[in-house]
Length: 490
Image (cartoon, rainbow, N blue to C red; front, side):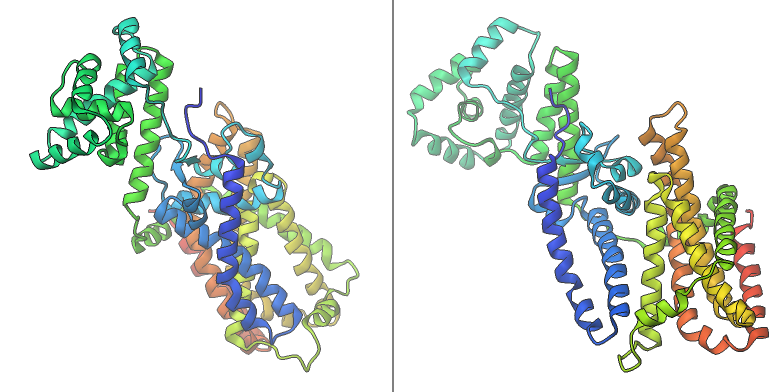
């Protein structure tokens, strides 16, 4: 017995294709805009914007509508796995950041799980349901009579649904204006003689009044139930049927279907507004959450530091390779503003990889180590050339905020990985959800830090690059202000 109408892999795949087509159209102006720049700039902006735009597209549409345009076309909705209510913006964000882990595993968890939940669904506590699969069987009048005689008060699911349907239609019809009810009966008479309908209604339902005739006609298929009942009415029918049904399993199944349909109905009727106070509250909670992950932050810091020191003493031509990748001098390069956008998008992409790769266990420390190697390779080359102060002046003004944000993502990623290895008494998805959802507020703080760092690197760092004392002084002040905020207690 299928209790929850989970979306199938084929349905989700089709929805994903539609969404990717929409994202491609939205991304087109970015590719047109970057065509005049070098291949390095084009590649950097294309890959970074693809990751960031995809995450934003899904997070905003699913947060507001509990579905995306592609899912909507396939009649798929995302609901909270416990309450079957429409999901929050936070759940939408978490499930789509963790998409990184699912994509790395080719979405195999979704294919292999019976409930078709991917890792992102587990981390956010969500399920994807299909409205088309949310159906119950309505028995014929003849079967209804037969079952009622045999089952008596021990109703099966089919009989319970039929009883609830009849009661709801009679209740609804009693509120109709007399003229509307009369016209409806006349419409039914076009296909079947009224005397025949009255006789069969009396035999089946026990009455031949207009409301009973209408209920019988729906049961017999003379008129569709949806012409009389709203989606909320069907929720009421399923809930009432869950009280009628005799079997505990069938009662639970009907109750779940009612909850899922109620969630879909709410998602279709209401669009959740995005409120600025969500961001402000996240910023306010950031210091408390940061203090909780301090041990993992220090672990991430030492991974970055060790990797950087290790790479410093390795022979490397990474700088010359980067210069070659940037293109020849005659190729137009972006100005400071475009450079800032490129840096911000790239940093956010790295942040998303660190956070989203957390469930892969080794992904977050590995990406942190790779960033340390890159930093150490460049630093080592400049130090051997006697330009250590140039290196510090070029990195520290923006690096304080950038590295802090990156290490926060790495810390959460490592904590998520450990939650899967050591789930305790909880299931692995429950343990993962607790970490992913709890520390999702740090996304806002990290985004703010990365935005500021990007503009500092593009506009201020070039000015301070050769002003060593000013650059280092500014960096020290940044560290003091930032970490006084992060480590403050209420």
